Each structure stands twice: as C-alpha cells, then as structure tokens.
Length: 296
Ligand SMILES: NC(=O)c1ccc[n+]([C@@H]2O[C@H](COP(=O)([O-])OP(=O)(O)OC[C@H]3O[C@@H](n4cnc5c(N)ncnc54)[C@H](OP(=O)(O)O)[C@@H]3O)[C@@H](O)[C@H]2O)c1
Image (cartoon, rainbow, N blue to C red):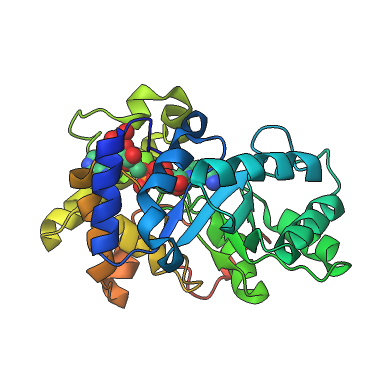
C-alpha cells in the first residue's frame, strides 16, 4: 500500500529485498493503491522470481462487486503487474448492491480460466462471508482467504471472524498489525506519521484507550529488550486461528522490527501479558461474564 506513495520506488525495492531475504513470499497490493503505481512497482520487482511468490491484489473498492467491474479491474491489475495469473484475488469490500451469487460465479469462472488461484474477500463481516459461502455453493466455490483488520487495538476479528475462519478452513491474512503505526509507540513520544498525516487513520486509531495500549506495549517491549512492533506483529500472528499478518512500512529500516517478528515466539505468559494491554471484545452473545478464560 506504500509502494509509489509514502515509499519511493527505490525504498520499495529495498523493502522487497529485505522481505525476500527474510523468506517472505506473499505480497499484497490492490487496484486502488497509489493510482496503480503500487501494482506497477510490485510487477517490476517480482519479474525474475514470480514462480516462487504468492501475489495478491484486490478489486471492487470502487465500482462495486459486479462481475463486469471485477473483470475490468482484474484485467487492468494483470497488465500493471505484468502477470497472466494473480494468485489471490480479493473483493476489497462488501457491496450491498450486488447479489453475491454474481460475485461468486465470477470468482469461479476466473479460477476455471486460470487467471486467479484463490478467491478472497476483505473487510467482510462474518455473516457476509457465510452468505458468500452459501452463494458459492451452486458453482462449487468456497472462500479461500479473508483479509480482516486485526491488531492489539482492533480486536473485533476475535469475536466471529477468526473463529469462523478456523471453522470454514479459510486463511486469515490480517492487515494493519501495527494499528497503522500506533503500536510502534512513536506517538507517545510526540512523533508523527500516518495517524497525524491521514485524518482517516487519525480517527480510526484516535481513542485514548488505544494510545494507552500503545504506551503500555512500548513499556513491556523495553522491559523485554525488544521493539514494540516486533511484539505487536508476533502477537497478531499467535492467535489460535494462525492468521498471517501483512506487514508494511515506508522504508526498509522501519520494516525491520516487523520482520523480526518472524523469529519472535511468544510463550503463553508473554502472549497473555500483551493481550491484557487492551480491552477484550465482548462475545457475539454479549455474555462476557460466562467466558471460562475471562481474565482480561
Ligand atoms: N484490505 C484492506 O482494506 C487493507 C487496509 C489497510 C492495509 N491493507 C494491507 O495491509 C498492509 C499493511 O497495512 P498497514 O500499512 O496499515 O500496516 P501497519 O503495520 O499497521 O502499519 C504500517 C505503518 O506503520 C508505520 N511504521 C511501521 N514500522 C514502523 C517503525 N519501525 N517505526 C515507526 N513507524 C512504523 C508506517 O507508517 P508511517 O511511517 O506513515 O507512520 C507504516 O506504513 C498494507 O500495505 C496493505 O497491503 C489492506
């Protein structure tokens, strides 16, 4: 999402190289990111080793979930990425105005034609995913991957989305594991970044509780001699549903603590200590007091 925006092409190339050196094979972009520059830069970077990679893009953030819009944007994404086939193709968000049967039929046809490998959804509620599963039954298509928001300061996915993914055999590729940068702790020290530059993110991560969580995580990280971003990404990945956090930065230097999460295993005490730094979301039934492990 930063390629061609906050990260120049040279910085994007450095981040790409750092990811590859760390063993990362999955790269995520979208038709809507940086007016198409993100896909073009990624396309240039992956050229010599495409077969070793899992490339994801998304359509329908603008223009809805109709087959015509998904096909038009996918074709444009494939041209920008210079790819015949996109591994993971997401509908970027739920579209209440399009029948999900049309969307799922479209995914099935694209799979059959070999232009996508996995059908994916992003920013869907659990009931919307299950509606898509039902809509896909007629054409034999199930959702492969879901991309929800998930971090220590955005834990709604724990309530229904992540348990649903486990139940349905859907891989969760979670975005914003650092809460857009909040969980690096830099705002507590008066630093700036996306939250101060982009009002949408400022509002998304604007509550005092979230900032208190970020400060507490930074203190815990200092005690452990590590970076708060490393703990934040490792914590998101350690959920029992085994989500795959999508990391991001504006430079290779910034990316390093997130990459370090690959080698950071949280024992159960540390996992619980991090978890206790933010309020636990109520269960779907709202009977929080009846949860057996209701400690935080
Ligand atoms: N499906 C969707 O709707 C959706 C939405 C959002 C993202 N995504 C995907 O998920 C990816 C990750 O999302 P995200 O960028 O929101 O992830 P994030 O990890 O929560 O935030 C990354 C941002 O945190 C800041 N940061 C990272 N490391 C830092 C460090 N060491 N020190 C200081 N600041 C640091 C940088 O922003 P600043 O320097 O600007 O502060 C960086 O761009 C995106 O690239 C995109 O592919 C998808």
